[in-house]
Image: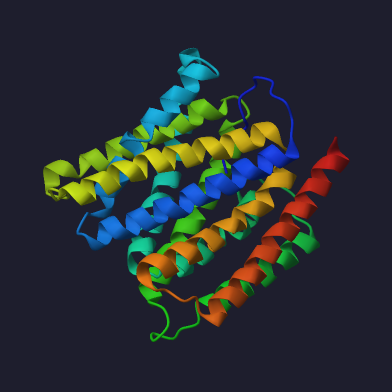
Length: 301
């Protein structure tokens, strides 16, 4: 989830916000599929990270030029951006690795653990008060994770599941960092510096033989991953400009539907019953945490 949306006033519409959020989740599902396909064709993860971020600059910079203007990229908090980028890129690398090792639906379902990690980290790092209801939701959510990650080698690669959960933890840590830096930094600024850091991280592996020369098809998919990933990030931001987070965030779970459709059409994947059951438990826990958080914020206003 991105940081605070740009300050430019737009017409509020819950329907538009929901539509944008669902479209963003479709983009993220397509991105994950492209990452998986590129990895299967021999592209190393850090090379994929480079293309994902380098070509994301195309929609990101177009968005900045048409909304806030490039002056928004000025910052005095490079340290905060570096922290957010480091944590977020750890999550991205682990998440991409998980996608390359697991069925698309499995890796997507496990990524839903991120809100659970975020709740725990907000208490540990930001010292936010987390009531018994939210802690109970976190505990139930992790039961859902255990349902999905049952130690059965015939169903799921344990190593891949570990990377998926590390990716979810990294994403949660990035959200905590965004919550802190977002007090002074606009959303486009945070997205810009994260994208720049991701491009540099991927590029840094080139001198060490961490790249392969992609064929034409793989190159097209790598470039598409960047364009679609950047577009998805901007759709997430725009959704928050149109509607409150409490309205649009539950629709993040629509990504599992998109992933299931793509996985079936491209890889003939059929989600396990345990994956669906565990994902429903995790999703329900996440929505309940969001509900409790929204009530807490309303009381504090």
